[in-house]
Image 1: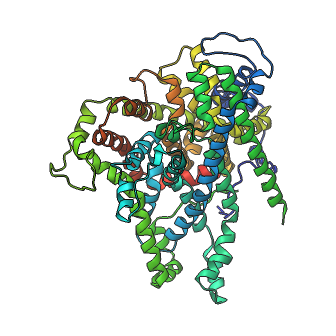
Image 2: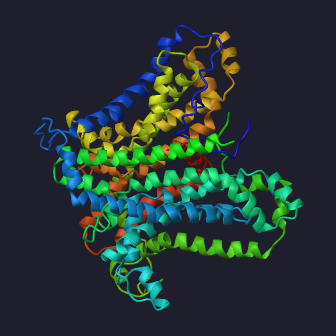
Image 3: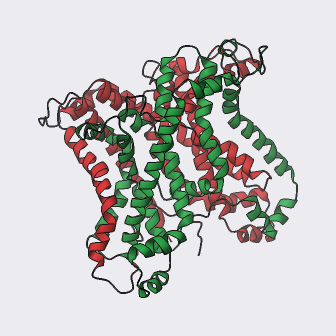
Length: 315
Length: 299
């Protein structure tokens, strides 16, 4: 078994997706049996992924409500309404802003943590447990804990800041700090995932590279700059795209910590979809907003694939 | 071709490499700095949960009085934790979470392994296009499907049942792809020998391929389980009956329900966190491997 430092690129379309079935003598009976083995997954795949994707697209062209009324096609009405809806734009902006604010530290700080843990310090399990543990917790659990920490009068955070003379901050109750608060919580909560990806990548860098550099008289910083960082470039592109896609889908912790407030200052697009569909009963309009969001995600994925294939094309 | 980055090694693995030991032995100022920074990071990262656990040991009145107090005058007690277990619905929700997450994991792994095996080893018509569609579907975010899926559950009359929680979560296209790649790397000769002996395909899959795939199956299962256990949005949409709710959804309903019961709330949150933290301590290696494998394949 060989191991390469280059991670598998999931969305690559360069033909290495499939190496063909590894059968020695093609068996005629495999035609039927193949579909028999595929059937359970194919059924679930069709019923709970393909069908709702198409159904949702159809709904987005109707005035469908939760009460079941109004299933006639209404053309692009929902879409024109969405483009003119200031709430769509503000929640979309909140989503993008949240993505920018979280993705940068979730990539850079995760890398720093992994480098620190990989310096050969003892007590690996303790460092890994501390940094990764929050990732295991449900969104509701971390939201409750952080709402308590952010409590303006009783919270631990204002208490600790008070020791160094920083006055009370309203954190979640102030439109200026609410988004920042949610971002801090999210970084704390999810950094363990990227941290582990980087730790795996660091441990996959061959020791020989460092030994060769040492023979050439390279110091710690030189080795880090010339070996470690370049080796991590491919995985960084991957971690970044996974992080951006994950951050764009934010809903849970914001809904639970601020309910999208104060004054809509943290409300992400998915919460607006939820409000329109399940509180406003307008399933058709909610579907249309979902699909606008879907196109955004597809767009970003396509940009990633283009960058990725260009990078792969270079020798 | 094996393309996954190897999982994070244990201390034992690292020590086994004499060169790594030699590099480690020098205690440089940088190592001291690394320790110092790591201690700060570890304290910062553990503090929120430890503080919540401590708050849970206080009384509601003590928790609601300002000031940094570690041990209040009334002392610490496990009363809140006992109350959570006895009075509230937390045990019920934990059971629902365990049931649905286990069902999701078992079904997902079973149907993904069958599909992955067919895609890897069998030459059936439409195989290539099927694989391409499955891989392309990874781009569809589950979150955009909540509206049509909800309508579907209404149509099937499944709302507020375990099935409503389970069924939409068993479709895991990345898992099919990961397993197919893994099966591809298993030498086909092993299966041919069994085939000559007259073993059926299913027997080969169950008795040769699956045992050889145990590491990847473990990693994938744990990854699916954590995702299902912690999933919020879909179970939140699919259930309104608090007897069917999973732990994350149920907790959300009581937050908005009760008044100023900080200590009780924290005890509740910590109790909800305990099962997975214990699981992590037991399955640390597999969990880490699962993250590395599944993350890199783009879940």
